[in-house]
Image (cartoon, rainbow, N blue to C red; front, side, top):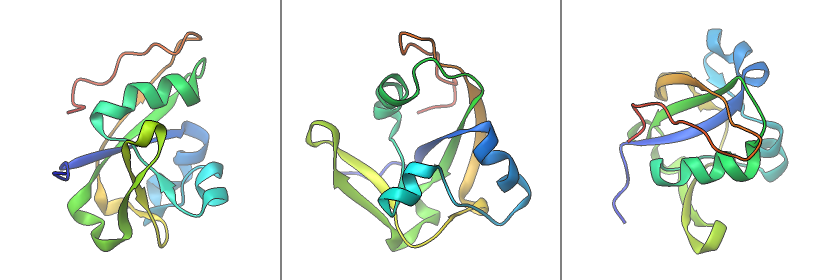
Length: 118
């Protein structure tokens, strides 16, 4: 598997807003419960939004540089056996975030991803 340059974190605006002026982002409640931070690749992002965020508006997609995460980034089998990126060992460093974009997900799970998702 070739590691992509960017992976994506989905967060609510309420959860992410305090982290904008901090050195890191602790993640969403599911991340704390599972003991690692969940991410998606570009090809996994739309399905993750459909399955877990249908009907939600004002979400934030964070594009994260994989090269900035080091050995704490682990690829593990998840949905359908596909490898998903998971971050262990603490908050997501703010310095690893390349960009952020707002996204809304319709009740049926459809959404338009930011053009920069690749």
